[in-house]
Each structure stands twice: as structure tokens, then as C-alpha cells.
Image (tube, rainbow, N blue to C red; front, side):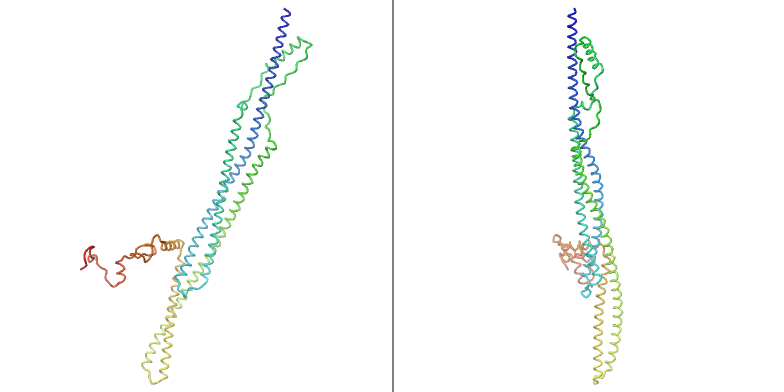
Length: 436
């Protein structure tokens, strides 16, 4: 019985010792597995932190890009508005130059202050038009670059988020669930068995204390990025910031230059336009005063001619043809009267020229952008080969500048014989019948 009892105790001691060893090995394996999983989790979290840092920088860059796009589009709208305004002035200026070149009498075609003002205004308007077009082209290119950059940032953010989700999916769900710690009963029982074994066998060496397994529930402090990871994330963020800042600076310079050009163009065009209007007004005033002066002189000359004609008629009636001195004096007086008539004819011609020039300048004062555009459209339609019926003088019906039919074939005959009475409706010959 003693032998059996000793064997039972030895057997139970061995079994319990084996269980303790197996429990220790299992705890160590679990600890190693947990450590490996934690390392993998930390690596994924570090990569996610890198991506999040770049994503935050990209979001800030996208906000700045959106604001700058709105500012650049506003600059483009102002550039277009100013270009349209300058083009209206340019149309008026070109139409005035065309009218003065084509409709003024030959004697009135000379270089004056008004022609200089029109030439200066046209040159300035064409210069600013070219500058505004160039700025518009640059602005559109900048907007395209900004939109491409925003698209790249959106795609990069999406790819980084997908990368984060893919890395998180590779983790085991056990990493996201806290594992409960082992109970105290399981740890106390092996210790009691070891104490019993020590009491039963006092010569046995003291058992080694089992290593306490690391608790997976213990919250480790968040690991900071390694220097290499920090450098990589910082390099990506700095690259994005650098590119974005370059674009933002480019946009800021373009907006500043656009606003300055718009303001300067508006001021200069208003100045030259006022100068042209003042020159045109003074020219019309001068021509009107000159016309009045010529009319007065013409009336004086006509009165002198009438008086001289009556006097010479009386002198000629009382003239003694045998008296050579009186004959010579009458001939001299008639030559002077002829010169006076020539002067009157020149005055009349000059008066007609001044009147025509005044009408042209008054017409120039009434020119607007709509009228100038309409006149250009008429000229284009008259030169068009695809619409020959719009040309004046071609085809059976006569057409005016806009292509509207003004006279039919029968009206042309009536226009050639204005004294002929218009036929009444009752006297018209029916179609298809012979004339009486």
C-alpha cells in the first residue's frame, strides 16, 4: 500500500509537472504569436500614419487650389469684360477712320489733330487687346494646371486610402479584439502543486518560477514614426507643398498683373477716347464756324456781283465805243467781275467741301459700337461670294446695303420718268393678255 501510494504521488507529480511545462510552452507560444501580430499591426499603423500625414497635406493643398481657381476665373472674367469693352471702342475708332478716309472730299483729306487722335487711340486699343488676350491665354493655362493638380491630389488621396484599407484587411481580426487575460486559478494551481512536491521531496531543487506571460490587453504607448518613415512622409508632404506653392505664387502674380493691366487699360482707353471725342467736337465746331464764315463771304460776294453786274450793264449802255479809255476800263471791270465770279465758285466749292466734311464728322460723332459692327457686317456680306444676291447693283432687283429689295423692275422705269403718272390699278394689263 505504501508502494502504491508513493507511485501514485510520483505519477501525479509527473503529470502535473508535464502540465505546468506544457502550460508554460503554450503561454510562450501565445506570447510570441501576439508579439508577431503586434509588430505587424504597428507596421501597418506606422504606414497608415504616413499616409494620413500626406492626405492631410493634400487636403490643405486642394482647398488652396479651389480658392485660387475661383480667383483666377474671376480675373479671366474681368479680362474678357475689359477686352470686349476695348473692342467696342476699337470698332468705333476703325469706323470713324473709315468714314473720314472714304467720305471726305479730296480737298479735306489731310492730317489734323483728329486723325492723330484716332490713330493714337487705335494703336493703344490694339496694344491692350493683344496684352489682354495673352493674359487670358496664360490664365486659362494656369486654371488647367490647377485642375490637373487637383485631379492628381484627388487620385493620390484615393489611392492612399485604398492602400490603408488593404493593409488593415491583412490584419487578423484578433488584433482588433482585446484577448482576456488568464484567470488567477490557472496560475495558482501549478504553484500549489509545486509546493506539495517540494514538501514531499525536500531534496528536490526548488522549482523555477514560470515566466509571466505578457498580457495582450496591456495598452502599449503609440509608437512614433521611425526617422526613415518621418523623412519619407515629410519628403512627400514637402514635395506637394512646394508644387502647390509654386502654382499659387504663379496664380497670385497672374492675378496681380491682370488687375493692374485691366485698371491701366481702362484708364488709358478712357483718356484717349475722351481726347478723341474732344478733338471731334472741336473739329465739328471749327467746321461749323468756317461754314458760317464761308456762307457770309459767299453772300457778300453774291451781293457784290449783283451790284457790279447792274453797274456794268448801265455803263455798257452809256458806253461810247469810240472812246478807247472807256472801252478799256469796261473790259478791266468785266475781267474783275469774272474774277469775282471765279472766287464765288471757289467759295461755293469750298463751302460744299466744308459742309460734306462737317456731315462726315457729325456722322462720326454718332457712330456707336452696334452701328460699326453692323457696317462691318454689311461690308462682309457685300464681299461674300456665297450670297451674290446681297451685292448692290447685281440681279434684277436693286438692293440696299442690307440686302432689302427697294425697287422692282417696273419701279426702275417709273424712276427714270418721274413726270409720268403712275398707272391706276384698273388700267393695269392683266397677266397673259396683249397690250391694246
